[in-house]
Image 1: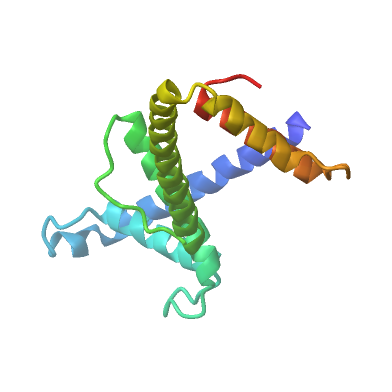
Image 2: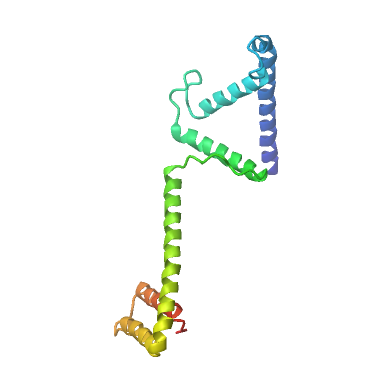
Amino acid sequence: MQDKVDAVKQAERTMMDAIHAAITQAAKESEAAFQSLGPRTTTHTYFADVAMRRLFLHLCGADADTAKGGDPEHAWDILYVGRGTARYWEKEQGIRSRRRKAESHAELERERREKSALTQSAQKVVTETAIRALIEHASISDPDLRDRLLATIEERFSTADPLSQVEQEFADLAKVSLARLIGKVT
């Protein structure tokens, strides 16, 4: 297996050497033409960019001359990998990204769900805190309040018929939640 991996890696190195050689050759052959354009870019940078763009179009199934006919899903997949690499390099260098990533529908939906869950969690903490304070305050004048609340929940879930697994789990969670609110272990 390792021999196959080594053979593929060697083929990748050979391919990249050929690409670099072609870029270098094109840059040498066109250097005079680029010098007349001024210092906007080097010939090597220009041809490396051309190679990258044409390879991208090729990978996406587009015509390299017109850029038409490509598969947008495949293009987004490639760009997603590139964006992930850029973010990795930013983190590696301790740079906070200045760019907001262009989210896909799935990413936007996940972010919406996460924000909703965070909001619900915050509301739950506030609600529980307020209820605990109210129960604590009310228990001063009504010492049996906690016991009555527990009895109400026990009565609610006591039936002659056995509860389904989901009903039993719900009942257990309700009892634990009440115990947390009133500060009493069941």
